Length: 228
Image (cartoon, rainbow, N blue to C red; front, side, top):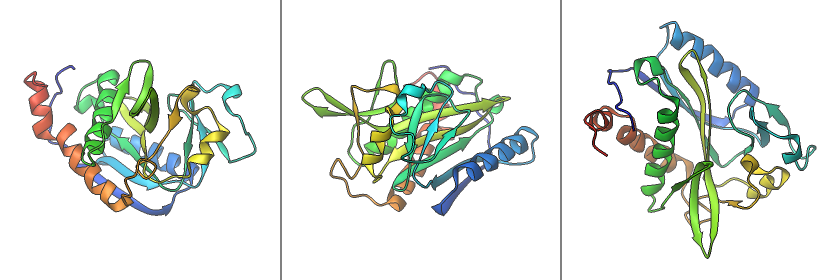
């Protein structure tokens, strides 16, 4: 992984109660991206949940929307294909200025994945990457692998938005309406589905702690020195 340039950066953490309308969230992100780019606002990690819905990324195929009338569908500018959002899923929208960090999109995505893996590790759960499959996966044994977290990002003038979605306790039956991320041969899981009845507040605590490990000054300093 390339070395990460260090700066002391102001960061806002925001946790929204209730269910946030998807279009409202996108509009809020776009306004914040412009403000960050202009130097008028701090970087932001925004934790929230959406009502049940499907989003179609820039690579989405119409044939992967299996039940068009099941839930609202939103076309979005993030990368990726179809995914599901709903209650019980922790969305983390991450708005960072890569010009003040490292202008390397691959590294940024890898750091988001590392953040999710570090968070899952705090619950004694091994999350893993898979070549050719964006997101984080759990080995269920006997050849079964399920996806527990999705990654989908967009970058405008080197400011990131959209982010990650970690399945805590969503209604997994809603995934039947799409081919999640275009992958048919594997399933989807959640913390509760794996026998970990963890509430959202505890997930938020561990996301913040893992963020400091992966994106914080100490972690970035280690990366700058070439340590793993």
